[in-house]
Length: 380
Image 1: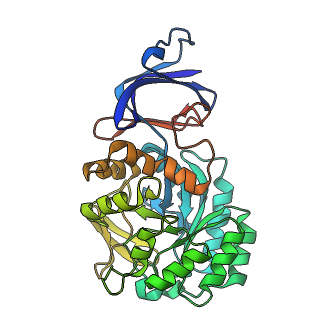
Image 2: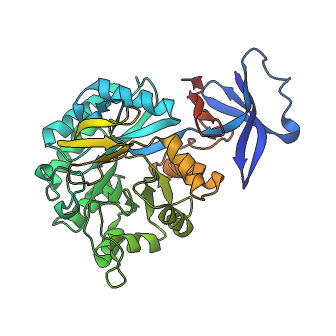
Image 3: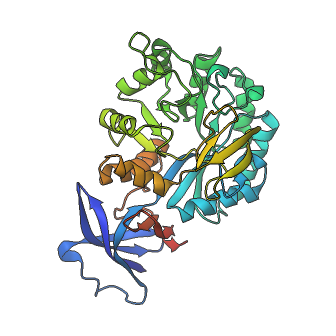
């Protein structure tokens, strides 16, 4: 049994003093106010949180790499490096995310992911997010156009056969030929259908939502800008209450005003903080090969040679910090990084500090630096 005492947890719009009792891998009790006396519990494993903030472990639904490793490398080492990097930055679960590639490269990444699951050296793998290859070349962003293609149900069936149920999210451009059929294929298998790298009109987006698409990958990025006579995909997503959206809150991909607008419209239960990080996360400025492109990272911003943004270098704890600095209430920012992605992914008993929930927890200081991470009740 472990007791974490003298911590603040977000409750409503306030921070309350609390202590959390962990038994094996679960939260046994959350002690607040008059229940804060921990004397009745086993005394040998008490951790003093020094009045710092305790939050649920964060969940990243969209990450490509970290610490000089790209998870499309085709090695278990690259996936383990991301697992360790996530844990150090307060992320306790993540989706291994692909970029558009050949079928062979994608299947190799899937096989290596399967080899790591259950043996993670840090954050847990919650599944796989396929970003492509069925994306629109007109909104390719950093996706390699060589590998972009129209939806192919036979190819996708092959991917699913190899993945053994690990595919949790697929990002597509639904306006491509075969897009709606692909949405049906994915929804029949319980997969979250996300839209991005898309030139979908407002009407095409509405049609995709009516067929089962429910999520927007890196909202506003790699999709048409809002125009008053051509509102496009973003407007359709913002006005549809059933659709959730990702936000790369790094101070680059989205203006603070847009972050606030997204939060105001969608609320914390339909908005997800994510990193979309490449292998420069945790490393810094320099030259990188990512998705078949040469990427330059300067002052923390990753771009192709033509200036196109190429993923990000932000971490989940920094995204949380920036979200609050941009004006989102702390409790809502925490929710967007924890319980909301857990709910979207269908992860039971994860993402909240509640009795009976998995003890994935993160202690952060006043600047959101990670002091300590617990994964399944064990200190990372």
